[in-house]
Length: 399
Image (tube, rainbow, N blue to C red; front, side):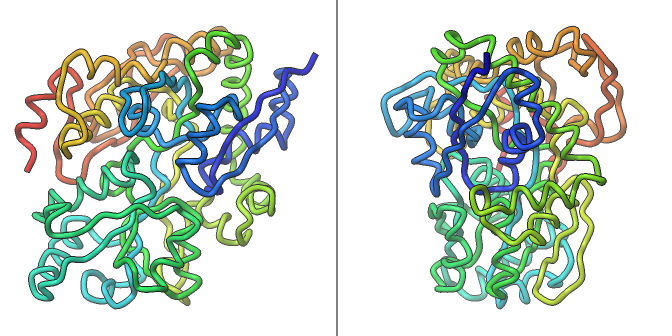
């Protein structure tokens, strides 16, 4: 008997795994059938999840944590047993600004671009405005991390506002923002409309930064545990299909459909293949691992990554540090469910649930419960690392 799941999502390339699991039959192999609910804003995706319109959702990892902690609304416990991907976002700025802070058409060095932006802020004596997709988003935290490490004070030297991803190009065209941190294909849409230039991939700020998760209410996971574990297996199969170059064209065509991203197929293909056009009319630039959806335990919900997101909430004054709250925030990520779903499948499972983020600078084989896992660099651009057991000490040494 087929079990049905309603899944909410936003039209972004990193919503790919549930869509491809359905389209390629991986869901059916696990006895599942998906109904998709597409929205325009993250607030609406969250509302549908909390009010039971959807069973699970493509969700900003920090938003799942903030909701569990009761930030901005009554607390409701969400869980994230699967990471839908790492990286995949970029920072796009208005064309005149790009001319002043980088060499348009190339990915700049984050430190150099940040220093040039700081100088431009001081020279123009103007408070610029940057867009992020939600205040509780990795887009916001990585943008803030980059700005602060570059000597720019978020909320003082620049204004940070919320803009839904599909409207970022419109906001740039209207001159309402000077730049934005957003996922694909909306950076590429801004380039093709000739209203923006991509200057950085957020993977340059944190090379293996957690991005979206599969989120659900804790009660739904408890009541439908068998279905959730089937879903995890279907998503892993979709991930293997997604990263195979032989499938890029097919998957770009599927994701571009009106019912999913409703975006030009060519723009979707660029991000899938890690080849982006940074300024209109230029050639493609290859940035390896621009998106990272499968290997190196990419989908494993490391509790250390949830802890880093919590540390940024504290850093920017959204919550007070509290050890018990920190444990609750990290507990949103559920590696136990991921392990249970994939045990005895032969898939890779790390031996630990947590690691020091930013500590890997070269290929490093780590202990595994199952399979073999070799991690590549997961560095922050400023060379710092994050030990989830020392959050207060970490925060104390940040600018």
